[in-house]
Length: 66
Image (cartoon, rainbow, N blue to C red; front, side, top):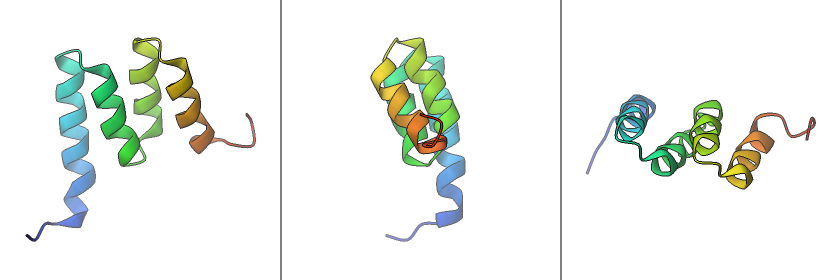
C-alpha cells in the first residue's frame, strides 16, 4: 500500500477534529499526539480531566520548564 506521507498530518487533523465534534476527546488527543500536535492533544486531554496525559504531552513541548 502506498500513501502520501505529506498528507498524514492533514488527515490526522481532520480526524482529530471529527473526534472532538463527537466528544471522543481521548481518541482525538491520541491522534493529535501521534502527529506531534501536542497543544491540541493537551487541550483534548484537559477537557476530560486526564491531567497525567496532558502533562506527558506538555513534557514533549517544553521539557525544561517542567
